[in-house]
Image 1: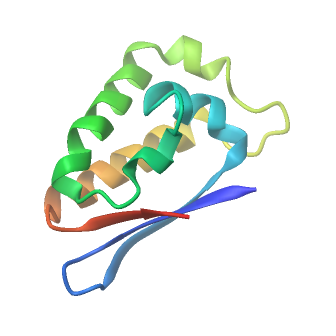
Image 2: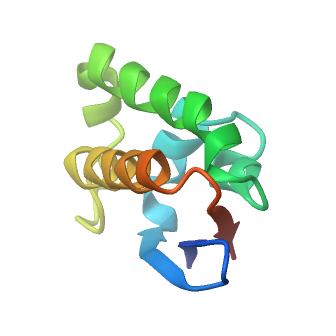
Length: 104
């Protein structure tokens, strides 16, 4: 099971797409929202979501050892991969503040 995350621009053009494996749930619930994880961002515009994404990246960088311990034992997904995904989302949102994040 995984989550599909995309960002659409004002004209409903998809400008970012990523699939995040549920194997990383412990990590993304920890850094984004303990109850909703990535789903907290669903429906938000990029400008609203940026502070949450900034916090998630900062927390992952400041507590890298804790997060690396959460790497899935089956090898599907990793700390480095999730961090890169969040950094890509940040970049996309910074360049498209009117974009909307969709999480399915």
